[in-house]
Length: 142
Image 1: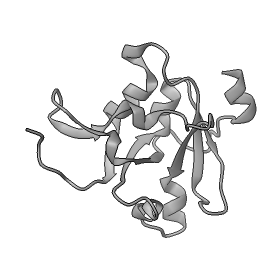
Image 2: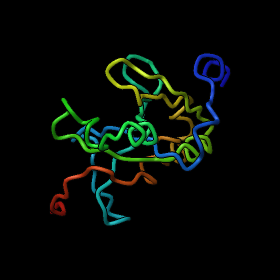
Image 3: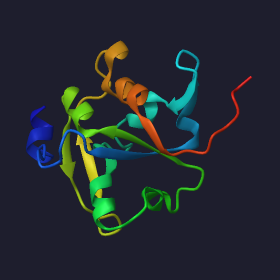
Image 4: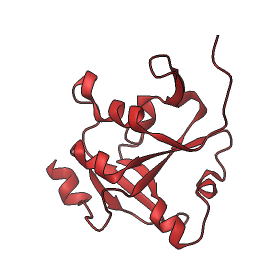
């Protein structure tokens, strides 16, 4: 974890209940037969393809700036938006680090190993615990 604690230290001012919003591409939305609901796949919670930690948006900053959560989907048509908490991320040895960008002041990263132990991998736990913030309901797959 030293890479994350050094490069992306955990910001404890981001409280455990804080919502971390993640854009979910359409091909990472699955129907979970066990739970009888649509949810993000575990692939939706992997680190970025370029090797950077997983990007999220802090709902608290959106609220402060009087922005709707759907505003982070601009330019990402057909995407959904899911939420996990900072506490859940930390439960799976992840740091939550604000990283404001010019184009997205509410941007942050979640840094840590996400694939260790297939059955209990953090990305799988994030996918199972995620709640929809913006999601267009679809028919049950046949």
